[in-house]
Length: 477
Image (tube, rainbow, N blue to C red; front, top):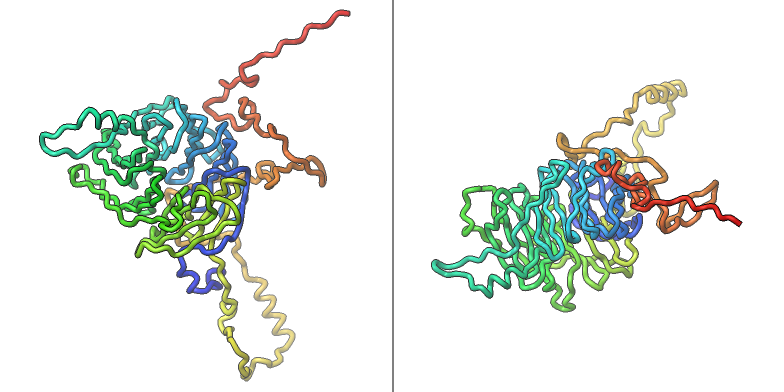
């Protein structure tokens, strides 16, 4: 019924235009929707992961296992598993069925970004700080890491060789971002010199390299179909690139080309971009600005700017677009709040009654012949009782057009008031008595004694954090 109340012209608009809400649970630094769009994962600066229910904006679950800021989040295809990476040199694979840590992988350097395989949640690729990217297989309890190349593959003429100077320069490059293609057959990596490397998953070798820019590649993201790529670089230009079909194993690597479709930039203010993302349909590109509080929306059909969303006095960092609705979320860098932009839909109240019509001016009403007839009280009472006897089904939920069946997973929501928190971090200590939460409260998991302890590390953590206390000797007078 609610859908029928909405103006059909508003339904045709597929990008947000109004700031409609704010949510917060700690200082958010990263966001990611699951594939169904009913859950929003938020990584915080203290290493906690908060999962929000999109319909109610309430906290559905909290995951504790990191000790530093969350760098990236990645959902599995069915929505049951979540991969988190942090500045504490760890990546954790979470099982949202019970909130346990399924696998914990430690690296020698902080993690830029870690992305799960599209169809295998026990395989992910990670880009490390000043280190080679790695492909990690966690199908067993002991993770297996495969080092991936970073130096680009250059196209050479017949008889031409790469000079030693060029080899030395390529060796200085670092991989900043790694993602899988839509089928998971290849890895797409961006380097610090503006190169995009396409790595075959089976051989773990680079099959094609293209230099998109001269600066640092900060972000690579695919649209929903996996056919287009958005690239954010340090040269203040956002590029959309058409990806070739990589499913053919017999494809000649020399035939692979990465064609730039559009270059989005602010030629007047020369703004830099913090983060960029495709819309749910892939028709728009949204980006947050550096040292500014605006979100730019471009339309890919003509490459033009269609909307600038404003945020109240705060620079925005990570931005995410809902996978099925015109809903945009972004986290503020200063306060850590999560801002929501959507469409304010005026309702058509004429949909409540089929014979009700909305008019702009008063018109003379002509009544029906039997409209105001007086019916017997017994007949009216009988009609009322017949309506009350009808069984009303309040449990059956009709599937919406964007629901997923078969491979979808619904996370059980914890209805525990202790797992939710207010914006001011207040806790209830008595009837009507509130106090501010102490800085170290709720972080017992860092010493291995809290509920954040993962299943694979239970029994190994030292509750005293590696220290032992001795009983003090009695003092004699």
